[in-house]
Figure 1 (tube, rainbow, N blue to C red):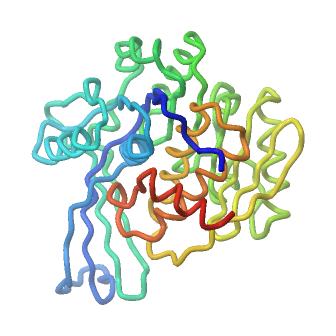
Figure 2 (tube, one colour):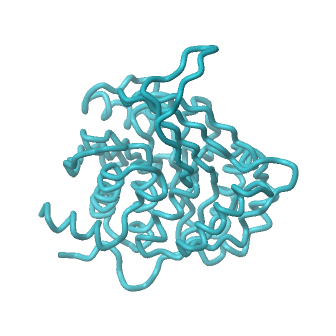
Length: 316
């Protein structure tokens, strides 16, 4: 079997968010004005940028994360956790006078949830922060981006990547409709169904809808963007200048799909930066996303390289 990642370590820069997820479980979510007794509470490191950085690091890449946390206890905990995962946090700045990014998540017995996100320091990531990190771009193979920081900083990162001939992968989450041209003309866009609907205006209910949406998104760019619509148990729709192809999923018993898309994006960055053929890279990313869905939480669910290889080998 062709190994998904060679012995040399690809270099990946992530510009994105870092959150602490505050998760409480309750028999049912409270109505307005109601007080209930909860069942359990957890603090789980999250944020799409941090999740993808951890995923890429666990899968064999040298990863640097650009962003901000608050000068608070959450920020210190988040920084320590990322460093334990081998992520370079030299450009993850502590910011005085504001909290770290937080996501307050209530989950009831039925599985329904209610989420309030407070961007905190993530909302203060500036284009100047990106420019001050230019040295990281000079050595990078791939830049990985999402939308939980200001869009102007995302655009500046794309511009800097182009200067240094770094390939760019954008996970366009959370969903936005009105994107500037540089964002839709990157090397790879990997939305899920909801995000693809926002970008294309096409509601995705089946594989045929995904193909139509992928084609629509592809023509918005400069004709070379690889569009990958992730559809969970329905697999991935790949669309580029050669056409569209539906790629099957890895069937698993999913328990929490929260960070599956982050595992997919991080793994895709590693595989493409390692010069894997596109379809092999997508298969590697799909396996990583499937494994993440079998585990609870965000960063703790990111799979390790040996586990991804084992799943791929079991489905030859």
